[in-house]
Amino acid sequence: MGNRTTAVAFDKISVKEFGDVWFAVGPKGIWRIEFDTSQLDFLERLYDDGVSISSGKRLTAPVRHSLAAYFAGRNRTFHLKVDWSRLEGFTRRALQVCARIPYGTVMSYGEIAARAGSPGGARAAGNAMGKNPFAIVVPCHRVINSDGSIGGYGGGLRFKRFLLRMEGIDLDKMRG
Image 1 (cartoon, rainbow, N blue to C red):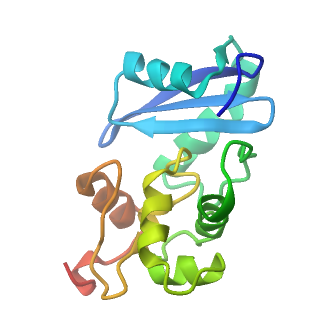
Image 2 (spheres, rainbow, N blue to C red; image 1 turned 90 degrees about the vertical axis):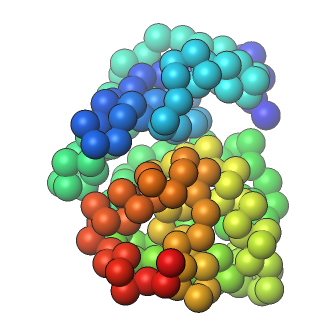
């Protein structure tokens, strides 16, 4: 949880096939990324995070450009700072493993759990992915079930399928 002394700036990009992608950035990096939400709901979640809102196009510009390039097919790797400060333990470790999944590839929840130090913790890895505050940049859409089926996605399966197809993953070769 942040505190009111942590100030974040927010912005959005609009992607024709995807909708609005909202993001907030603080001095330590990306604080939150969400899509398929309204500005009001996004700001309410920032308020619930306990941060204050400031202006700061200087902070948001690199994220804006990097996300826009990703959706335009010109960016396959994010070189952006992420503020991990409010995440702890297994959730943090699992999301940090997820952050290293290369563009156009997938990894199972079980593999995430094992690499995060909890073999057999696939369900816990799924819960960690569901708490991912850095959607797209920490690519939890690249995490699937061990049987090859697509699994879940906090942003909805329609968006997960869109992102995987955009990255060239053949969903017809996956189960489900």
